[in-house]
Length: 118
Image (cartoon, rainbow, N blue to C red; front, side):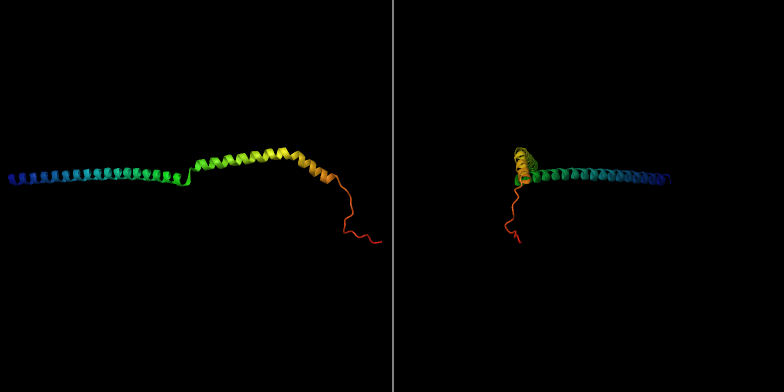
């Protein structure tokens, strides 16, 4: 009987060791899966950044730089405003004189279509 109980004890211990090894293997598998997932995410991010960089380069080559375009437009607008302002200040006095002369110097005349009936 002792040998039977000793054999059962050995079987239980062997079963326990097998169960422990199985749990350990499951943990290692979980860690490997987690690590593989993290590596895949890092690789995807790297690929995405690379493709976005290529896209931006192609976009810049095809369309030109947006920053340069907006800077040029801003510069042209500023130059146009400056020209209009200087033209306004230069011509304002002479235009005011012409306008006042036209308004104030009235020469009364009879209109050609006026018929005087007596």
